[in-house]
Length: 428
Image (spheres, rainbow, N blue to C red):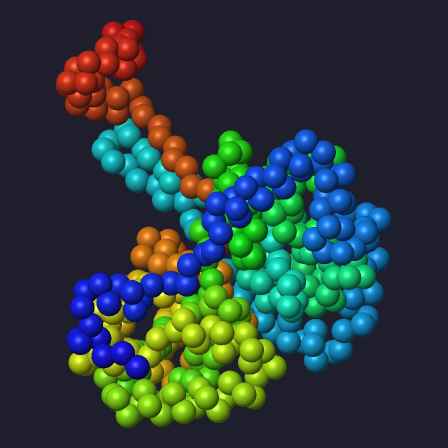
């Protein structure tokens, strides 16, 4: 337990420091080598790298079309219904985000329009390390479908048998995705960005992944013209703000739900009640023993913090300074704090709004900025699958009305060719 007001400025900075992303130099070199191999050798590199990193020798990169029907047959009715319900929830929230054209006549005869159109081709990276993530398929596939992207490609690393989890295939199917490749890691991102003999390049890649995937996304977005990524990413994190009206076992469960993601995950509790923090500590000790991934969660807790603040206003200040991926507010009047909470990827309000709801099926998107990027990067939404552009149309009178301003400003900047593009029309 740390008391925020007793810490020096440097100690406060240290208390909110994220776990370091280790071996950045060696990681960058390793990923650069993988990217180079895919660029030079295409499909052949993908087969070899999949055998090297995933331990499986693939016969084909693309998922067989018969796998869709087989996946649906193998899944239980309850599992399929859960996926469909989550799909419907996510679809409902993202459908409401569909943009309409904005048309403004800024002066008589000068009409400006802001238009939105779907990104032509997108790639969805779905991790499958310790567990399949059909929820991520939905979080990416649903907005891609609503945005009406012409081509949606899904990549996912295979298991030791060269297969992808049935849940992932089924979720992709109901999102209308039929182009799936059984590849993962940095090589999958490289294939999507550069293209190979089998896989045609896409314009933008979405989805979380390990540090190799994250590094590949970063490198390729800087190297390949016209290629973009969804957002920078780091380890998962959650911050809970709670007072003594909150339930300690709820707060502890929320902290552990994020700690189980990985050993580099970080969880933080801010409270103005020392008694509450002590109660949460006891709950953490007992609840962590119940988890199948308790070893991972215990390691994550080593770089996590329980911080005592003077009051909730100070807790808000600390939260804004940290900028968490997930922010949970469990106080007597949580909505009262919302106007002051600035930096968070997604906020969960009240005792009965666990972060798990947003991860799976409340309707919001679970692809969120981490590592402090919530201060400047938005949570994933329908807008990320589209591009916006402007259109302007001037009548002869509209140009004549605007001409004195254009002539004066082009003269100020010394750009006479710009000025002549106006005056030649007025002289005609």
